[in-house]
Image (cartoon, rainbow, N blue to C red):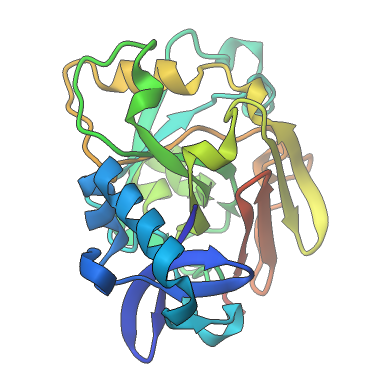
Length: 289
């Protein structure tokens, strides 16, 4: 299923895309009011949604894509977004060299205030940064609580996947040493348009990923190029730390970021960023004009 969260008639709701339209499911036939609660309910939620769609799809309120304001699939993240750094060999090299290829997983987080949805405007923050950059990434959404998860069992804890743009102020990242400030400016975590359940995605380690800026391809790769696989990431994170339903893990970006060009090609006001991942749609966000 392709889950969506959106705002219509000044009300936040969620649903699924079916036949090109967005079906409103919030509170229908005892379904929860938001998608995060559904994720927390786990397999029972998916069974209930399947039953509702089978029996009542024709009577549900539905909307065209342009009739709603798209939100991030999880509009209010429970915790900071967990991010894997330098998880593609070619990206590690473009950011420094062979010596920058990590031997162990490199983790950082983005604050929850960064999250916006498909179509929403990214603030340029030109009063504090001159090096705003894009990073197209596959996002993993955890569906079950767990700690000390083995790599063999890790995929059982995945609810689904989405597209995430880990927008970064490179100069702030360098200035402060740690990544948090440079990664946590308001609106710098576009996510969506969908949260696609894992059964519809197939092998998450064989998905094409492409980022365009103003129609020009900047990043083109495949998730199979990740250094650390999704089971390895989940297992490593869960050693001593409990993962919760609704946790968001960004799995890293391939080469082609603005900083990797000579000279660098950072985002400018009015730019349009599009990130496409196979099976997950296209996440599109304009920069503040």
